[in-house]
Length: 340
Image (cartoon, rainbow, N blue to C red; front, side, top):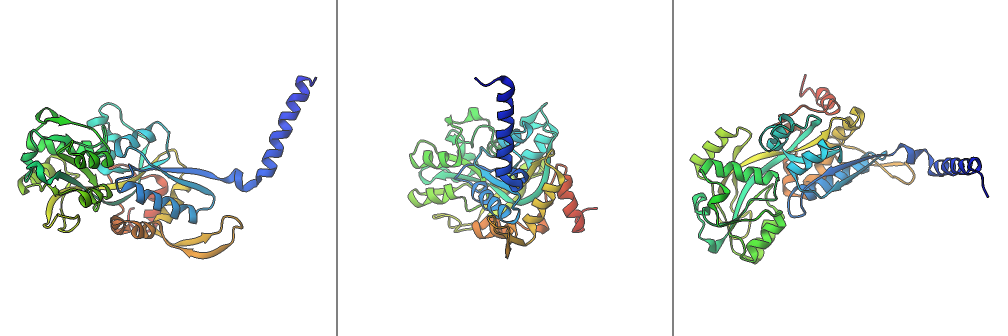
């Protein structure tokens, strides 16, 4: 029988051998994840494209995109140290950092910004036969305000506040993801849903191919009221033809999607990620380490993936940034002369 001493020596030897065969490249790997949103929204495809682009350019970092419950949940994941970075709405990021609104008394002080990405629009979609032609027509209907605790629900509540309504004013309220909301509308189990995402949004596009829909316009006076109450919103117009059956421009309001990160991620890592987001680099073959081709920026890859990716530009990288930048990101923007 092996003595405890020999058993200990055997375990140490096995660990040492595993480290030798793993090699220095394995030991040097860093893992970095991006929490996105549901599969029916815009965060999911863009986050996946960004992760793939960054992984190609940064061979020492294993970068993955993970489907999530979007803004509020993603901020909480960073606060709890369960994810390194995430896509969130700028208004939710501000509330999380300051401990206001749905984060009242529970600020997430380790939240930092990397970049603003693209505008996200509050899209109010209804079944064409639900009798909804104006925003006030949603009263008494069966509502899907977004997933519980999501950025979309926050936007819904802000709009409802602007028109003097609460959940009590609806026939039914059901909290669902974009895909779930689309299915409920298709099955005639809901009348109207709020979806905050870059347009075109896949869940609405798919719904419009099988069902007659309307996008509910927001009147000018309501837009002025909501944007005054909540300055992080701005007016936007969803162009006619964005979805099947939507044949006129639809006035709406928008906020910014942002890429945020845990303050505890090393500055050197965030600097390289920020640089890879905005600048071309060298494509590195993982198996041999040979540099063999120029790699496009993460922003360029996102532009090829989704229509909203075309709005991801360095010129708007700091728009709506209401939380502190991560020092690694700040270093990059300082080098570009965008901040002092």
